[in-house]
Amino acid sequence: MLDGLDAVDWRGLEVADRERSGAEVPKMLRRIGRADATTRREAVDRAYIDLRDLLVAAEGVTNASTAALPFMVELALDPDTVARPDLVDLLAQLAGDGAAGEGDPGWPAAWQRQWPRLRGLLGDGDPATRRAALRLIADRTADLLERWHAEEDRSVRLTLLPALGEAAAAEDPAGGLVAEVRAVLDGVLGGEDRLLRVAAVIATAPLDPQAPPRAVPMLLELLTDPTLAPEIDALPWYALDREYPYDREGVTDRIVRLLEHDPAVAASFVAGLAAAGTGDRTWDAELRRCALDEAWRLLVDRPGAAAPLLPFAAGMLADPDDEVRFKAVHLVAVLGRRAAPYADRLAALLDDPGESRFVDGTVGDLACWALTRIGDPRALPGLVERLVAPYRDMRGRGGFPGDPRRPDVVDVLRPLRAHAALLLPGVREALRDEVARRGWLVEELREVLQAWGEDPQLPGEEAPYPPAWQPPPMEAGRAEAVVLAFAAGRDRYGEFRTALAALTGHGRRPAPAVRATLAALRDADRLLSRHRDYRAFLDDEEIRPAIDTVLALP
Image (cartoon, rainbow, N blue to C red):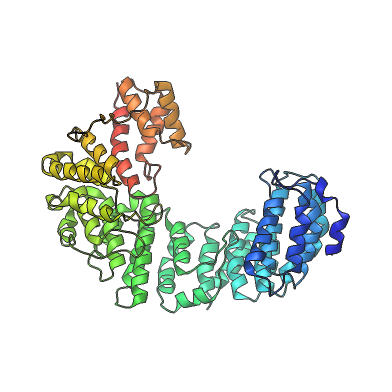
């Protein structure tokens, strides 16, 4: 088969990367075909990546893809080919691009010629290859049903079942295929296999969005069983659109996303996870951390869940696990004044040295911030020193975008203008120190002083400190367009708040469509911010009153 590569004029063919030559395609195919068990995995991965870069184009399949197809099929069918699932994934990706009708017009006929042979991969002796081959029939309900009745490997069945539900949701609801799929799902839900029962709930959701809420008691029973997590880890559970297998946290996250259309039910589910992990074992702490992670993601996506989530998080402020307390305090803090009933619990944590495994800062730091958000004066003594001290040893801000983390200094201090008289000496002293050693916080501290209406200039500084940058005035028509773009998810440059200020400044009621859009935004269960971390809550608290101001214009 590899010898036949020389019969193709590869140099005359178009590849996805315009700066590369079609002559590289046979080289990659030979590397894949000649790799064996002794070949380094890095070299095999590199060959597949290069082949993907050559054949997968944004505008669809190329004529090089069509020419390479029969050779790729030969390699995929050869049990000696290393990492065949990777090659099958690439074939499925090309099939999807070709089915979209984009790219080389010769592709459909070439694919139809190879399809009878490719179907053989569905019954291949290697479960990982069979699992990858499901992508070739992901939208074919009848083929997926046939595969379900023939498949015996649990890992393949775990992938197959949700794919079956997705495909059936696109069929005629009154048709026989949907009825057959429902019968399969009902049978699994009443069966003995715990993981397949969870997969069946996920598979039923596209056909019946209320199925996951009804299954919450069963899901809690299964997912809080300490013997299930090792079972998930031991059995690779992939989704067709997922590169890595699920662990218990991944399965839990998928369930929460199926429940989040009803924030109360989703919040009850994560609270049930935490309640099941109320012992001292390591596993219990991991479950409580998982529950708090899901609570945080739910709150960012559905802020209407705040009411049930606040007491849930507050109940974990005294947890024996540092990570649990860290996540719980952070969740309480972002809810601001709504957390006032728990101020005494937060004050008891001001000296808590507990830390997260992945993020800098302590439980005490977050408890102090939570008290400032509430307006509790117990947070004020030593606040500035607490905020700036970590930066003196050049510790950066750890963590991942969207995850709980210690807030920026400016975000803590800027809202505390009412306490400027108490905090001002500390801020000026910190600014002098930061300027002297060229620290990281100079701009943030100057921004705080400007927000408080204070002079950001240090005594004796030669160059005048420039005033805070102000965006240029925005015309009313442009401001209205930005509002509509923000509502449609197209505000790429974060102009929404500037647009609201411009509409207020113009002093005239905006057009009816803009007013309706603003009213819908104000009433929507979403955070009105481009951020996905704590800043989303700070933005939202400022944006909603600004919307009310615009809507009240004469």
